[in-house]
Figure 1 (cartoon, rainbow, N blue to C red):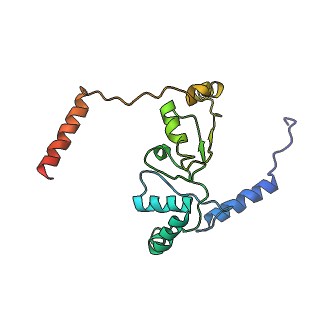
Figure 2 (figure 1 turned 90 degrees about the vertical axis):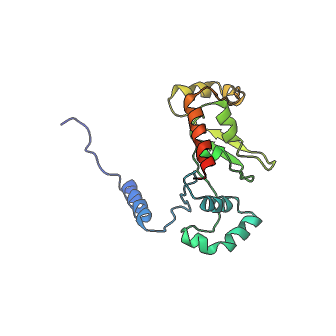
Figure 3 (figure 1 turned 45 degrees about the vertical axis):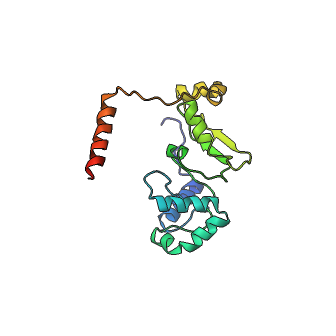
Length: 184
């Protein structure tokens, strides 16, 4: 005998987890009002636009949602307000949700340019915005910026550059031009 008490299941948590698992197993059941939806470049543009309308939920968005009820049904998409939108880093480019007032970053972006792009999604309609960057990962990158956040927020954003002597780039561009010229 090791002198330790025998392990026992915690009935409360076991019951809680079993209840949550059964709720999640039921098709269409919303747990705590949460709804998970993908919002990436892999989502069809009309579906992504509908999800953004559900997130913004302004007057124009409600009109759009009300006129597309059949399409929503085909896509198995609800028309109710979507209070939270979780996105991949692709959200940093090409999406304008002006009413967004908070951005939560799961980790510190790789560069100040990425930080500016991602945090710049919030506060576009002139209202104050909150940006939270989670630094709990023990990676040297996250820990460095946790200790010196100003290095990320005020960091240097390098302009994009292109190497015009890159043979892969030149070859790819020439192939694209050739294909466009042939009309294929």
